[in-house]
Amino acid sequence: MQLQALGNADFLRLWEEGSRMHPLDRALFTLGTALPEDADAVADWPLGRRNAVLAELRRRSFGSALSSWCACPECGERMEFELDAALLCAHETLADPPVRVQGRAFRLPTSRDLAIIAGESDPQRAALHLLQRCCLDAPEPPDWTETQMAEAGRALAEADPLAETLLQLRCAVCSHAWEAPLDIADFLWSEIEGRARRLLIEVHALASAYGWSEADILALSEPRRARYLEMVQA
Ligand SMILES: [Zn+2]
Picture 1 (cartoon, rainbow, N blue to C red):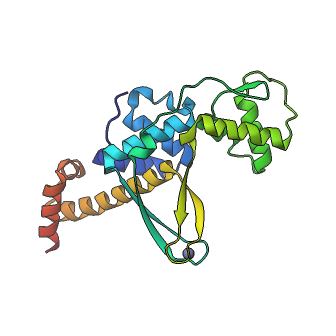
Picture 2: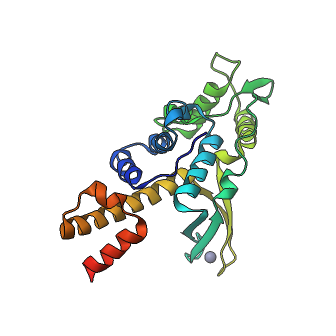
């Protein structure tokens, strides 16, 4: 797998074209940019594999330290935390055998499956539709009970641990403990957006001052661009 770190031109193109996309498509577009040879295949990767490769891409493009913050749901205190992106890419999705629940075989859910159920507003029906899609040996609509569905959901989550990452958080002020999901796709997207906006501001400042083209300014190394900006803004 030839994963390429994102460069300045990628940040701008992703931001420009991805801003209008559904988050699921945006994540696939980002992966396809970094893995052009796999661009057609990523929609059918299990979600854990998608997330592991996004985490690796984040590491190569922005570094390993993921810093974020959230507000304590109990007292509102702002909590900052940092984790290592390597933890999210260390283990790729385990082998992909069918997962067996109550005598039925399931494959792991993919981005394509999530896109297909995205329009379903009732969560129970969406879950049923997803299980139906992933079930390998029951073409007819199954009559699963809620308990059976929950069991199948649990088994699929265990078989693909990186499909969803839950952070265990504890507030330093009131000691309230809770779980918060970390969506690496959203996280990476907000960083791509932030980087693109910063680049546009820099291009604007340098193009206005020197008349250089966008491509020339983006091709400057970070230290060189920063030094010119200092002089322009002095
Ligand atoms: Zn608190």
